[in-house]
Length: 421
Ligand code: AMP
Ligand code: GLY
Image (cartoon, rainbow, N blue to C red; front, side, top):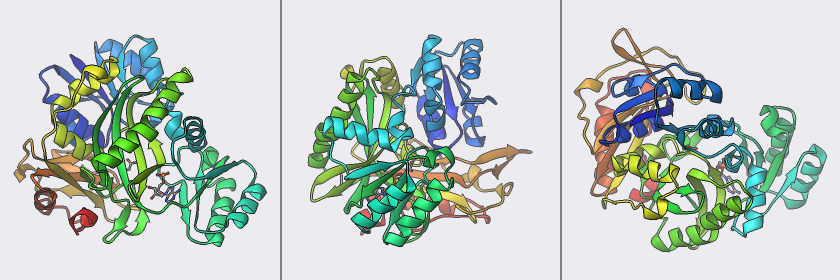
């Protein structure tokens, strides 16, 4: 079959790498793609948030299956447009994508289905929000309702910080995303992510992971899109996983179906776990980046069969063949990220690195220029490896990262520290 993947990050390179290994994949096209994807697929320049343009492209290229990587095209209704045009597509409708695009909507769904989450209130008025913060006290969490590229959440340890966040959000710092804010109880515990395929009716877990959001070693410095991840997440024991499925994921999926907006795609649930009890922090309507890289390395070629079963509504017949292994990915970012950074520096050493079913350097912000791989974004490469233990996966991932010759890049040295002790 002919398969089109939308996106250009490490997540999409990992999806492309896994899908390409499955004999069902004849032709693979990535739009817009990056230098890594260009090595294994055709890349096409396409506005991936323009559903009409994507449908026309899919038509012209006899595409049989479209996999949508990032949230922006999902929130923009690209999956709806493709399905209306008769294409098989992996990813939720715009209505179902509100589970990521509106934090207030997710809270409403949790209330309706009884899923454990932080206590909260929603505000469109700054004075009312300030009064609520003063009444509740700190620590407290202030969130812009809409999509804010991962920057719309302020975990305020003092009342003054929370009040400043209200000034910023209602002052337009997050554009339309901040027109409404959700103010939440601060939850303590350990965080983990859980990835579940949903076909509107059935759910199939495809892995757990933990990521590292802060830029610096020891989880210090500003937040980023994620500096590294590992799978599985030890805190997601069988008992916690079962509770998360029974109390949070399945009720959410049932509530979405009941509302006439069934959820089809991968649900990425972020939990806070304390004393064996998971509570929902947030949903995303896509794979995590870089969490997808460790999941795809662990799943390999079967990922395509699972995504197809999801899109075709037959997850009840699908199963995951798990290897009893661990995977880790280390993100190489441009110096300066998540602040300002330069583009265009040449990255060497990649050709000499072993690329096998258990170790891969996935590309994120890269671009080929005159036969050289160059940096074209903040997060640039993902050194990813599997091992029988997490320590082995870490050693292999770091051996890959250390083999890359890129003086303008940096990476954290301590990915996995919580689990490795
Ligand atoms: P979100 O975008 O909602 O995942 O929030 C980003 C990060 O903020 C989460 O990964 C948590 O580390 C933190 N966070 C969000 N909500 C809460 C909460 N209610 N209590 C404690 N930490 C939170
Ligand atoms: N790594 C966090 C995310 O993809 O949202």
